[in-house]
Length: 401
Image 1 (cartoon, helix red, strand yellow):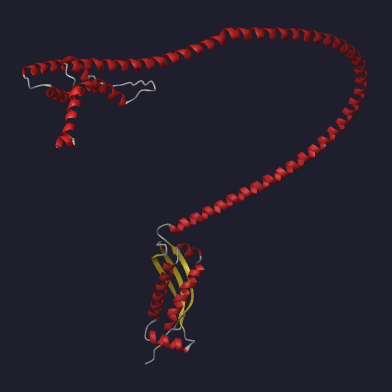
Image 2 (cartoon, one colour; image 1 turned 180 degrees about the horizontal axis):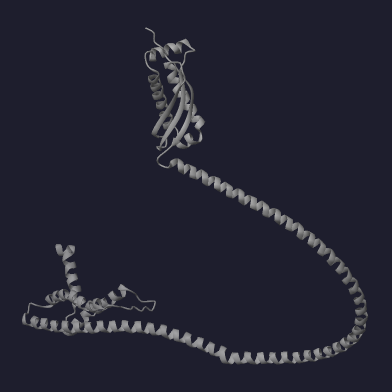
């Protein structure tokens, strides 16, 4: 059975609608490819016979078309819209090389591939065109502005050259006029010099006369000024004396007065402190006197008890005195504990602080034996010394024997 395979060139319309590019923009591409079964090389022909023998030309075209379309979509997905749009040659080359490597194994040769059309439904390509159009318009405006600038520069240069020529002409005219004026001024100066010499001779003589008059006037003013200075010096001396009498002496008096007032205030403070201390002492003595009166009354009661009880004699009174003595000390010190403020004044030889207060209290306590002796006739100090002597006698060796 005889089978035939076509070696004719087949033109394929490769369409890839809405394929997403590397940037994710969907575009549609249409390419035109020419392919044929390669009959020149035996190996490729055998491969083609193996793949397509028994199939019609349309079936061979469909296989080649699907292969090209798949590779076209793959290349579209690896490139951006700008690359496909601006560098079509690169896109054609990529599709051609990739598709040829697969179709050659089927015995089919890709003769050519060309990108026919590229478009999108999102307006992306239109936007690129608008941007390019804007760039072209911008470049046109820039070119127009540069041309206008160059024209204005040339006009300015021409105007500058015109003005320079005008200035040169005006300068020549001014020079000629200057020369004329200089010569005329020279003639006029000679005439004026002669007139000025005559006038200056007169003015010089008049100036000399005025100078002599001014010198005499200045001499008079110097004498008058010397008199004024002398009068001012006398006035200054008079004012200094007046100042001495009216300000300095009263100021010294005021200073002396303030010093005396300060000293009086300091003495007042010391006297107030001494008076406060004296008041405290008097108050203490008064309270001590009250305690003394109380003790006197209690001693009187004790004396009556002693007379009533013959055995209640000096020893019992001494014992009661010693029991009462701490109470007396507490009563004496009680006013001091109620005082909110104490001011101590020292003469420099006496005690100060708590020692001074303690001494005052102890002084009042030491007066108690004399008051007891005065009131009761009992010498407490003698009783204490006799008691101590008796204890010493009992404690001696002779008494022990």
